[in-house]
Image 1 (spheres, one colour):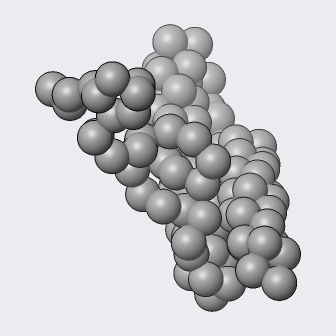
Image 2: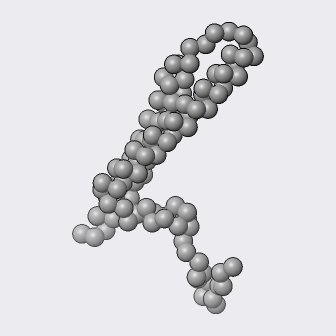
Image 3: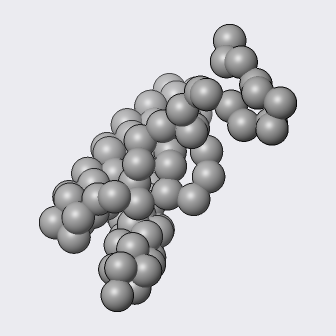
Length: 105
């Protein structure tokens, strides 16, 4: 447990706040690193959403005894979620990168 001084400051690392996510300083990432992190988050969201959509479609197909085209899970679940997460990550990390460069000048 972190000790709090009389002035109210804590000695524990920052976990939330401007540019921090679970203690990782996202505000200090470079341009290429921000792009790589954004695309990695987009790919992870695409594959996660596709996995859960396939499982849901499998359960639906088993319960209703209908034949379902599993390729629709990529088009209607994985792709939109992946693109939304990619856009959000690019916007957030890009904003942090621009703010850092504007603050330096």
